[in-house]
Amino acid sequence: MGMAEDFATLEQALADLVLRYEQYFSGLEKREPLPLRGEVERTVRRYIGTPINNTMLKHKFATLVARFNTYREHWNRILRLMEEGKYSRDRFISDLHQRQRGGASPAKAEPDRPTPAGPDNQVERVYREYCEARKSCNLPTDGISRDQIRAAIEKQKPALKGKLGTDDLAFRVVVEDGKPKIKAGLKK
Image 1 (cartoon, rainbow, N blue to C red):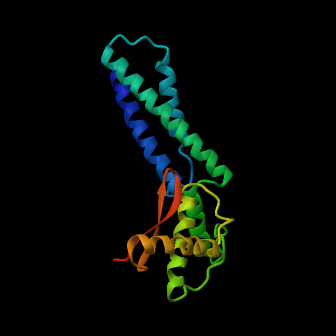
Image 2: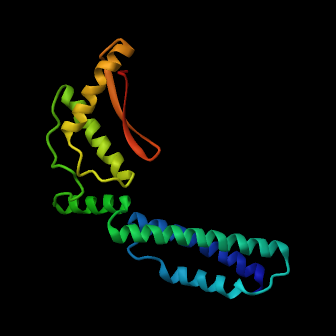
Image 3: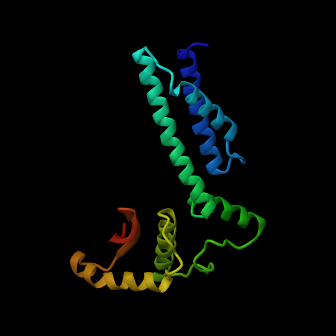
């Protein structure tokens, strides 16, 4: 096989490897795709010191190597997070498996309570959204309580009532600059 065919094969193998890693990280694949990764690495090493005279092929190879190196760093970072138990999709899937087996979810900050009726319903919803947003940003949730969320909402209400002219407010959680925040607006 010539260089052009090898580079086309390398491009396809890299696309397959990206797909397989995504499946592995989402829990669809049980094992890391190490054989395919090794095959891609061998192909890259085979041509890394070889002079390539064709400018188009040289550019294609350089682009493939750069993409592979970027993905490899990304995969290694996610694997490290998984080993430390900090990878959010991994925690979600493990919590899901735990619940399916009938056990309690270890990632919850507080045990589940029945959702109360009335204004506390909004506090409960905002509390859950805030905790989920912190988890998705890889921030700890153990220091957060429903009472803190309730106090934050109550603290904002007087100023918002004066500004908007009504106390018919809806609170929601948004993520800005990688940090979750509680925002308020008029109820729809």
